[in-house]
Image (cartoon, rainbow, N blue to C red):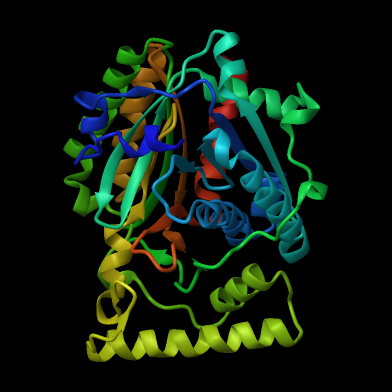
Length: 389
């Protein structure tokens, strides 16, 4: 049933998905699931950016635990996630998302909106939807989405075009399983001064033209910022284990509670695991946990970091200097003036990680965003431009 996605051969480099990768048309009996946090900008302005990112991470692990693996199509966008679902998993995933909506409200007081739109309906409306894959590491294969379908699906969900598209809390049949959600790292300071959260939207409906625009942007970033390892937002020297707040947030996310026996027991267990991790890292002790060698934990974060992606917009988290960023803004503003693209950008001095590990497998992903709102704030500035377009 979901062999369509498994059979797509992943590209070995991110940029090659725009240059040579074969893109596959999404079957018309699949579904688009989009989740986001209502009022995320206000929550972020109140300093709750980690809660917003955590909510997105919870939807990813809830869906992964229905699948039993992480080789399925999804793209993390900061305050939400876009998934593609085969028909055979529609109802169990719908139930898991319904419970996630409940848990996010209970744990963090945030309202999550989720909607599921049939791909067939999007095709009938004259849109297209394609995907391809990129092998980020041995433990994470990333999906990229192309075409005009996603903005329309998002619009239908936000406008409530069809009530049946919206996922409601009362649709929960079985509880969502958040096993594998983990959030034990401090915000990661920039090595070069600035963390840029960037969203670039090509202004063209033609797929090949969009790809060429993205390649121009990626080539400029390489010429200005250097190779990927130079602008990667996670560096081994800057990654540090959390000491309190991060661990509490994980315990809240996993139990849905802020106090009580279950919460205290979960927090105690997280603290013990964190202590073992710290000892292994400090003394380079090769303790094993699943596929992990605990002394190399920081390397795994970097290897499977989800810091650049494409879902109709190019989303990147980049570490650089103010000089680099000003040059990037000048370049993007020029392409914007030519009518080729529109962009939103947000600057912080650090990034944050939200980690999703599929227990009993070697699948993992470490979602990276800029601190203080990152992608959500970049999206806000992009939306303001689009309104005036």
